[in-house]
Amino acid sequence: MAIKPEDLLRAIATMRGDAVCVPTMTTVPAWRTIAPDDLSVVCVGFMGGASSLGLGLALARPDRRVIVFDGDGSLLMQLGSLATVAAAQPRNLVHLVFKNGVYQTSGAQEVPGGLQVDFVAMAKAAGYREAYALADLDAFRRRFPATLRQEGPVLVELSTGLAEQTPMTAPGGKPFSQQVEELREKLREL
Amino acid sequence: MPESIPASLIIDVLKDTFREARAALAAEGYRAPRHEHLGWILSVPDTHQKSVLAALDKERAIRVLTCATEDEAVAIAAGLYIGGEPVALMIQHAGLYASVNTLRGVALDGRLPVFYMIGLLGREKDREPRDSRHSMVRYCEPLLDLFGVPHARLEGPSDVHLIPEYYRLSRARRGPAVLLVGLETS
Image (cartoon, rainbow over all chains, first blue to last red; front, side, top):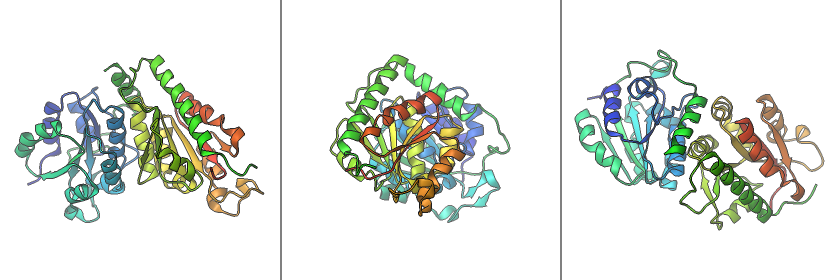
């Protein structure tokens, strides 16, 4: 059964502590509402870049947990990033993949392979320290706190339904450049 | 045009550039890092800079991360910048073409300082790059001009002063700045 992405994000918000979060595409509008003005920076305008942006943050700040909210379509655009992340071995990186099988933002066209693509197997084969899949919100609530404490990189494939809003239906939020400078300033002080 | 630029010279200048960058970060209020390296090189291997990349493998003062694509390299550079780490990219001209959307989305629209060293593989010594027989070489400077990206050529030992200058330029203008490496390093 697919999890509502908004429910997942609300659960993450209660568990993340002071982790830096990197949402992309359909997670962006909901996260903007759930966790406004916090330690987050979105990846919009360079689809596929969330895992790499998160990797850079994780390498720069090994003292702080970094959580990437990737999408299946987004990750497929930069699938090689799995190997790059695994090679860098950031112990503080948690890579969540919201898997709904479609490019929802552009009209819900099916991604190559649809729901058959196995990101857990790919992450393990690339060299992630751990990878697992969940399709149940309660299971996520039970397991995610331990994931946040364990050594990364860890990938979690999450079977989700469609988001209520996308960056197309709910544009707005601060420009990426402003988010960058605000997060940079906050991290400098921490 | 000289035959080559010694890799050791480029690495020494990169170290000085990163030391200067660290001092600037400290002046901004960043705490001294707990690690010992001065900065990061993000590379997707480049033929012109291969001797530099080989020498960097043995270098403890600079960390090198090889990326699967140039798109990744630019996005990782963004994360490192946000986290207060000095960083430079070493890629090839084909990689610039491959990652134009990330250059636009991250470095230009995102106003992120990204310093690139881009190898101009195939650059002929007897003609200007814009007149090259090779499209990879010929289109590089016009493409950078189209996007308003400042660029210069690193084509001999006397040009290495451009490394800190263009690194500083990327920070000062909060955007991309490019050095085109027009010959093989040695």
